[in-house]
Length: 123
Image (tube, rainbow, N blue to C red; front, top):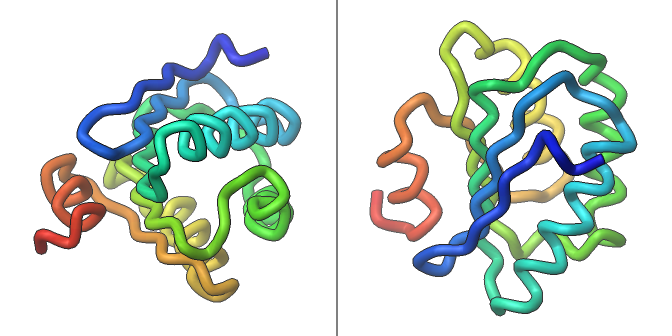
Protein backbone atom coordinates (compact mmCIF):
# COMPACT_ATOMS: atom_id res chain seq x y z
CA UNK A 1 0.00 0.00 0.00
CA UNK A 2 2.93 2.34 0.60
CA UNK A 3 4.83 1.39 -2.57
CA UNK A 4 4.11 4.80 -4.07
CA UNK A 5 6.07 6.59 -1.31
CA UNK A 6 9.70 7.07 -0.40
CA UNK A 7 10.41 8.31 3.10
CA UNK A 8 13.60 9.81 4.46
CA UNK A 9 14.71 12.09 7.26
CA UNK A 10 17.59 14.50 6.73
CA UNK A 11 18.66 17.74 8.27
CA UNK A 12 15.62 17.90 10.56
CA UNK A 13 13.06 17.44 7.78
CA UNK A 14 10.81 14.48 6.99
CA UNK A 15 10.97 14.02 3.21
CA UNK A 16 8.26 12.19 1.29
CA UNK A 17 8.24 11.48 -2.43
CA UNK A 18 4.71 10.63 -3.58
CA UNK A 19 4.24 8.89 -6.95
CA UNK A 20 1.26 7.20 -8.52
CA UNK A 21 -2.39 8.12 -8.52
CA UNK A 22 -4.03 9.75 -5.51
CA UNK A 23 -6.15 7.42 -3.38
CA UNK A 24 -7.70 8.44 -0.07
CA UNK A 25 -6.67 5.40 1.98
CA UNK A 26 -3.16 5.32 0.54
CA UNK A 27 -2.62 8.97 1.45
CA UNK A 28 -4.10 8.43 4.93
CA UNK A 29 -1.69 5.56 5.58
CA UNK A 30 1.22 7.67 4.34
CA UNK A 31 0.26 10.47 6.74
CA UNK A 32 0.35 8.04 9.66
CA UNK A 33 3.87 6.95 8.68
CA UNK A 34 4.95 10.58 8.31
CA UNK A 35 3.53 11.45 11.73
CA UNK A 36 5.45 8.53 13.24
CA UNK A 37 8.74 9.47 11.54
CA UNK A 38 8.32 13.08 12.69
CA UNK A 39 7.60 12.01 16.26
CA UNK A 40 10.54 9.59 16.38
CA UNK A 41 12.86 12.35 15.16
CA UNK A 42 11.30 15.21 17.15
CA UNK A 43 10.60 17.13 13.95
CA UNK A 44 7.70 19.25 12.77
CA UNK A 45 9.04 19.97 9.27
CA UNK A 46 7.48 18.10 6.36
CA UNK A 47 8.55 18.19 2.73
CA UNK A 48 6.31 16.50 0.15
CA UNK A 49 7.68 16.04 -3.36
CA UNK A 50 4.49 15.64 -5.38
CA UNK A 51 5.90 16.22 -8.85
CA UNK A 52 5.06 12.64 -9.90
CA UNK A 53 1.60 12.42 -8.34
CA UNK A 54 -1.01 11.22 -10.78
CA UNK A 55 -4.66 12.00 -10.97
CA UNK A 56 -7.33 11.46 -8.41
CA UNK A 57 -10.01 13.24 -6.46
CA UNK A 58 -8.47 15.93 -4.34
CA UNK A 59 -11.16 18.47 -3.38
CA UNK A 60 -12.90 16.47 -0.67
CA UNK A 61 -9.79 14.42 0.13
CA UNK A 62 -7.76 17.55 0.95
CA UNK A 63 -10.39 18.66 3.45
CA UNK A 64 -10.69 15.23 5.08
CA UNK A 65 -6.93 14.67 5.26
CA UNK A 66 -6.37 18.11 6.78
CA UNK A 67 -9.08 17.56 9.38
CA UNK A 68 -7.68 14.10 10.23
CA UNK A 69 -4.02 15.17 10.26
CA UNK A 70 -3.80 15.71 14.06
CA UNK A 71 -5.06 12.17 14.70
CA UNK A 72 -2.21 10.94 12.47
CA UNK A 73 0.44 12.87 14.38
CA UNK A 74 0.55 16.00 12.21
CA UNK A 75 -0.74 19.02 14.09
CA UNK A 76 -0.80 22.76 13.47
CA UNK A 77 2.74 23.21 14.83
CA UNK A 78 4.10 21.60 11.66
CA UNK A 79 5.45 23.46 8.65
CA UNK A 80 4.44 21.67 5.46
CA UNK A 81 6.05 22.34 2.09
CA UNK A 82 4.70 20.88 -1.14
CA UNK A 83 7.18 20.76 -4.02
CA UNK A 84 5.32 20.29 -7.27
CA UNK A 85 5.03 21.05 -10.97
CA UNK A 86 3.89 24.44 -12.18
CA UNK A 87 1.28 22.78 -14.40
CA UNK A 88 -0.27 21.36 -11.20
CA UNK A 89 -0.70 24.83 -9.68
CA UNK A 90 -4.50 24.70 -9.37
CA UNK A 91 -4.55 21.47 -7.36
CA UNK A 92 -1.59 22.44 -5.18
CA UNK A 93 -2.96 25.92 -4.49
CA UNK A 94 -6.28 24.39 -3.45
CA UNK A 95 -4.54 22.02 -1.01
CA UNK A 96 -2.47 24.89 0.39
CA UNK A 97 -5.61 26.99 0.89
CA UNK A 98 -7.46 24.17 2.63
CA UNK A 99 -4.58 23.66 5.05
CA UNK A 100 -3.95 27.36 5.73
CA UNK A 101 -7.66 28.02 6.23
CA UNK A 102 -7.63 25.33 8.93
CA UNK A 103 -4.67 26.81 10.76
CA UNK A 104 -1.76 24.85 9.26
CA UNK A 105 1.50 26.40 8.10
CA UNK A 106 1.57 25.10 4.52
CA UNK A 107 3.00 26.45 1.30
CA UNK A 108 3.51 25.25 -2.27
CA UNK A 109 6.78 25.60 -4.14
CA UNK A 110 8.11 24.98 -7.61
CA UNK A 111 11.72 25.34 -6.49
CA UNK A 112 13.18 22.76 -4.12
CA UNK A 113 15.69 25.13 -2.52
CA UNK A 114 13.00 27.70 -1.74
CA UNK A 115 10.89 24.99 -0.12
CA UNK A 116 13.73 23.84 2.12
CA UNK A 117 14.65 27.44 3.01
CA UNK A 118 11.03 28.18 3.95
CA UNK A 119 10.84 25.08 6.12
CA UNK A 120 13.96 26.16 7.96
CA UNK A 121 12.78 29.78 8.16
CA UNK A 122 15.70 30.90 5.99
CA UNK A 123 13.76 32.91 3.46
